[in-house]
Image: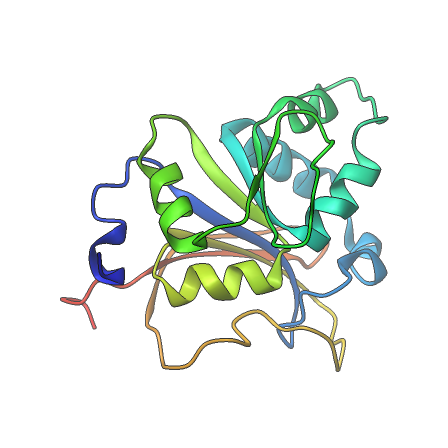
Length: 195
């Protein structure tokens, strides 16, 4: 099976949702994003999570989330939904995934994610997970990018699309601007006919 037809029968939308700086850094958002936090952003992230039917994460992001979320509580049910969602962690080194409802993907990532997309259900949401995102981009498995761009320049750190090997054209499908100065840019990869 070639990369070009791995995902042709997909039923679920795979969404990469990232916090970014103006210079494209995605690494360690806890160090630069909190100063721009707003109620509008919270509402946006709540709606995004509640539309999701599964989380797909790389090992580092998974371990960070698994350390933070199981003991959290809130009045909106965000933590409960985060903890109850099916979670798929891509890792060749993780031997056990203890966070509730977690499955380890340690084989052919492209094949297993493509199979996951073909299953019925709500959106598959990817947060953080830079190396995983590079793999998903390489195999043309991402249906939508939601880039929450923060008005700060970090200067260094892991950047989104660092692993891109060739130019890729995107279609801007939505924009949202928050009073904090944060802007969400939503893109879909252009089809071959559009390029």
